[in-house]
Amino acid sequence: MGKVRPGVTIKGTKDGLLFILNDSCPFSRLLEELKQLLEYNHSSLWNGPDTKVLIKLGKRQITKPEEIALRQLFATKKNLLIQGFESEESSDLLHTSGVQMLAGTVRSGQILTHKGDLLLLGDVNPGGCVQSTGSIFVLGSLRGLAHAGSNGDETALIAASIFKPTQIRITDVISRPPDEWDESEVGMRFAYLINNQIAVDQVQSLSQLRPDMKWKENGRQRL
Image (cartoon, rainbow, N blue to C red):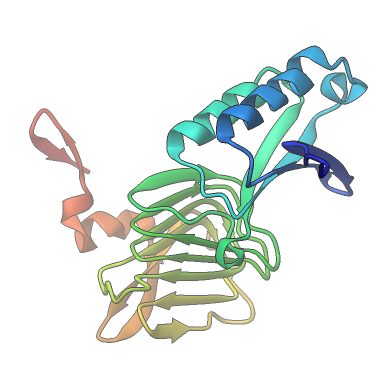
């Protein structure tokens, strides 16, 4: 009989810990194995300093409830900080559909793809790429490549708290920002398509460009 592969393999990296999940293993078994590791294995790793965790999914595509279940398990160890989920599918971090909020860092060489509008709580490092069929909102630093409206949506936007991308793209229109960004320009900025060109503006102007995105309360629109 062949040797049965473990459901979970842990490796140390220069950035923290890598949890490799066997993509041929039933998800329920993975959860049970992780529970045994985290709750009943009294390793010094679980009680040490804050440690970044990257979870490799193989070819598995997890659902939102499955992601929540994984995060709840890791939350039992306060020093283990999940940075993201990495999938081998098209070399992407995650590939999912619908409007969604994700947390993590897109590192150099990684591609995060999404169907719909994406809210990313984290940074896009130089050499990293975020691609979405809808708009992209980065609550962090955008220092890599961002491609919104990848399926032809000309109303798609790209916004970031720190807006210093190496390249931005909306549909098939590409804009390379200046080599030197004006450091005095603070605050979130966003890019949009106008007259087949990409323009960048302060986020305060967003409600004028896209009145459909105004916050509504008690049936009344508010800026």
